[in-house]
Image (cartoon, rainbow, N blue to C red; front, side, top):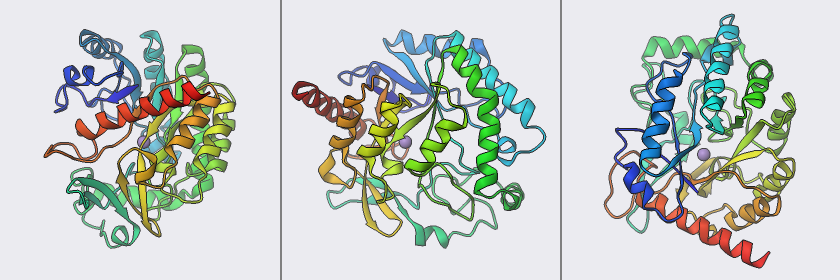
Length: 345
Ligand SMILES: [Mn+2]
């Protein structure tokens, strides 16, 4: 069991993470490296030492962001892919076994409310496609929750217009081009690459999103058909689309040995392309968490798992989705569920 940690300025300290029963690994990153630059091996090593000093280990790097030029297929992508592969090589040399990354244009996870009040008084992240469609990006990302300072107006407009030339098929080509250069390096360095599904799993702001369902995950793993080219099975992202049969998808990818990391989170679907995040146990949302874990268990999954986002409960404030308390409850629930599955198997 692992837990995400955002580094030295995370309000949830490593010492607290260490006290969650059963959590042995952290999921972290170097957060201040400019996108595209090589991750310095000595800095990565120092991060590992800091985590080790707290009695934990780095189980997953989440994530090394992929430069937009790679996703856009621009001429600089060769150099950028080489630099990315160099960072992956450094991970391997330091024994950091799993890399979670994503291939979403411009924005990664997107929500329209970071603190939707729930009937029990807790707050949760929420998404409503109608609310998203009303957000005006012409003056930058100021109105998009969680992305307020990410892009100024001119940078964002330039990127949005560059993506007008990149449809879903072109994005697939660009993903293949990237993986052809990086996945073999990961394979030989002993690093498992685990692509994170698009969150939410559909197009937003007219941008293509391609990692959304069983078919696309299967296609992705076959772009470069090596064991290191795998998936982060994020139940919350994939579960936002009711057409996704999560236990079947976990079984299918799991039996091929391509699930390298599990993100476990529940979502409550409240309308068409509308949901809020929910407590981790199956009955609080639309994700069959018991079914997913049973499928993972059956297919011999032994990789890292983390409770993905949590609600804010007990008056906690902090980074939306990443408080201590609800995620810790999730970690213990998931271990209890796993124990039950193991006992009855
Ligand atoms: Mn996730």
